[in-house]
Image (cartoon, rainbow, N blue to C red; front, side, top):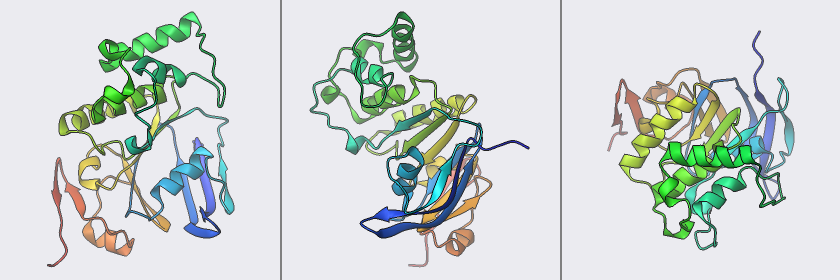
Length: 245
């Protein structure tokens, strides 16, 4: 029987003794592509923080049954200080550094990995540019390279399509489809209509978590799950399903 690479069991978590998540359970397997949806304040980002070890749950466990894994993380663009004086290349390189340690000297192999990733992502011409001069899509691409530089087993993306144009969004999802061949992906989004053609399964988070083992989900099921999302995809073309108005 295949073991999950990450497992959340009985998670109760929140802030200032107030729970946001209640009795959450989720298993992530190799090459999963899970779309995490739910309303603002429902606990999507809290779930990610618990998985990443950024937030300690009040109760429950986060386990890695198949052994320690490498996790790449793409935060929301709004969390990045664009005034910080750092270049594109330096941001990507920072993904190679151990937690809370900075060593500006890279090995020859590490330098090759940085150059290769910058070339593959089309960022080589921007390598020396400060991040404050980048567009939203360019910055997201840089942060994704940083998340990928250590060749993670699991890639976690928190609202990656926020503040980016549709051209970049399409390019990003094509890139993710290719990456999913070699790693598991968790993609947090409020927009199931856009992501449902990309992901394989869906987890709806709104205090608790309801896991749906496919990428199609009906308006009726969303009501059962108490998940107030109004973007549904049927087939290759997303469209909006509206409640009576």
